[in-house]
Length: 335
Ligand code: SAH
Image (cartoon, protein in one colour):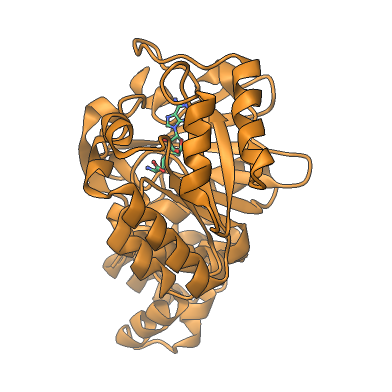
């Protein structure tokens, strides 16, 4: 069995199967998730007999850092190689008051977003819960400090890898010790899964990549979202916030001349009327060989003002890690 990705309960059961006391499972979980060990042999307080049984019957798979880049603002981006040789990206974002890890959930992605650096690839495979948690443990070890926040905003569509993503959230919460309130899952808006997620009773933040105020443009920018009409999507977001009591984040990435007009801002206002949400405006991070551009600052400000005048809370993602191509997929693509 693979140890990384197992809960304490599962590890206790596994120890019993090996004819060892169940409390050893708790110790193993501590080595995996609190100490972040890479090898079974490092689990120093386990009896030698258990170490050898584990070596025979279990694996502990950690990723390997293949490349790292650091931007002038301290954002560090990592290319990680998984046990089967596939490569993923993870980003460490230091802020004055928190340390955020941005994690991938799939190798490649099926969403096919027109503006995204990872789109051409298609979906290769889902990451396991252990591979998602590994990214946080790896970034934490690299920084030497505790990760306080996790955003599921790397490569992949989290809600199309639903079971493993939810399990990884629980592991981060219960085993690694990261509060669910500091975890954000970002989705293109897979409606049935949003409704299911609402029932999981997790206090995480749901972020929905809207990017357009009408279905036609949205379907062009995010082909897979064509299946999820805006009206129904926003109904699902409302249901999510009613069930969980949590404010939903609406992500709106601004592409010059495509979705950044004051008229489009007005349409967005109408869509969001009466919804418990805030809007995160994301000026586009240009991708080589794609024609999309970031709007000028005054255009971003004008868009923002329309929302604010309607009483919507707006946050703006400041471009970070610009010179290391921190937008999703850019590092993997450059290799
Ligand atoms: N698949 C999920 C999470 C991954 S991306 C989702 O789409 O929500 C996280 C966010 O970054 C999404 O809103 C995505 O549309 C946006 N994004 C992708 N490429 C970008 C780029 N080059 N510049 C700015 N934002 C980008």
